[in-house]
Image 1 (cartoon, rainbow, N blue to C red):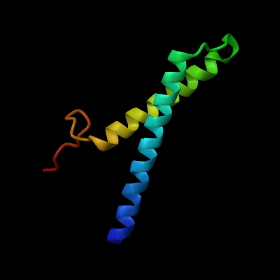
Image 2: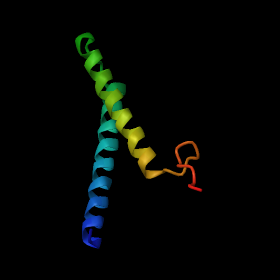
Image 3: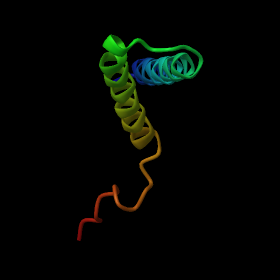
Length: 75
């Protein structure tokens, strides 16, 4: 891949990461500031859970230096 293609992929990944964290912030602020009807409570908890799962995937991808997730050196 060329340098421009790599830069475009990194920019796209960064944009998606910002979008996921922005949606997570909006969802959590709506949960704090508004009353969720009982019939929508399960749906809202599923949306927040999905966004939290994506956020942990993004953080794990951006900061892979945690020893538990690093690969063992090859002999």
